[in-house]
Length: 257
View 1 (cartoon, rainbow, N blue to C red):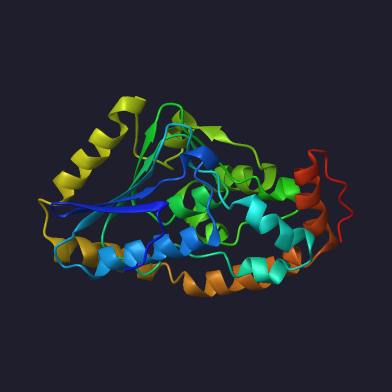
View 2 (cartoon, rainbow, N blue to C red):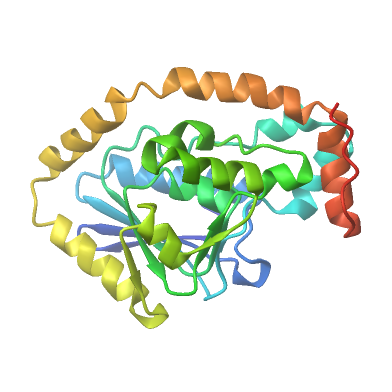
């Protein structure tokens, strides 16, 4: 297993703790880190002695702010939007073991997309959630359009997708996006307590329950549609203007083409 240093993989009895460890950059994700997360969860999934995963991040400012724009922005502003689309992953689609997400700050853009691939979610009181892509002429392509409306009420899903504005932890709890809000110093103890409680259950039964629930949604056709339509957006002039405006710290001048 080759995992970059920014992704930590730790075994605690039957629990895998997978940590994004780049707090100095708001736990933003490089291409290598995305591959590392994928490899870490593959290792978790293939280990019969691991029954539950806790997915979290270092520091108290962010779970993840999404893609590292220093690396991704040149693709976008240089016109390689379709190459950029290859970065996007429908995280954990084929992992049927339970995944608990412990959110310790900003959970936005790609961070939010990863959250939607997990099953149980604990958030620190200061955590915030959002999908700001439309503000920069982009769309999230990690399965969010398919997952989010199935996980929270339609109006709230559209609020997050269409306004690009964040919601706080309490509102996320109220609409069913997360399971529990706790003080920051109780985040990991609470997540690990949930994990230990799950480990008292039959592992095969839990995996099967999750697999039935996930596969019954028939998400794959939606993922294909999201990628096909989303690539049209990424190939637009607006998709070049948005990241350029972001990098230049100015309002975007969109043309609708």
